Image 1: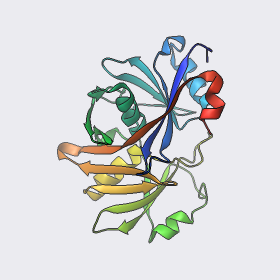
Image 2 (image 1 turned 45 degrees about the horizontal axis):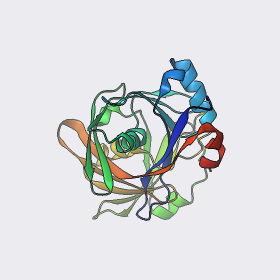
Image 3 (image 1 turned 30 degrees about the vertical axis):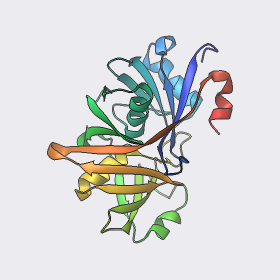
Length: 230
């Protein structure tokens, strides 16, 4: 990354006290990364769960990468970018995603079938979810969850990409929360990872809202990147 470039580092789906949340890198001016190969290389170098390249800040056109693959849709990058740029909609390759602000929460509305496939595995108790090794044995993306309070819609979850990159456990996963909400057909209050919070609400025609808190770690030149990633 050029020393003159600035990387915004956010934490998305923070807990009520502002801690935790999934780290997100946002490149507001991606002219130095004109193609998928250069963007993928930067995302791998940064090592965040996802990195977003903002191709058109006014229309919210974005390009999303994990350290190893390009995504057409992802939850926490869209929530974070919408909050950072104060957008009314965000446009990843999957399609237009509407945004609303509600107090401390930023919400996006997306189609459930836009989310990449995930294995959603229910466990008997939150304690069983907490006891899982990182990652659990097996292959493929695993979203492990259990009811903390089924009547209230409270869920305990952890997410394991189990792919060949640096992300062993995903701290907060909007796409998986979207899929779980679609499967259960009800609003959820999910505590994921070390203490991140994701709120969801189902709507008509397969649309689901995903909401959470966002905080800015720092807008910083790449020279400070190693500090910010801790």
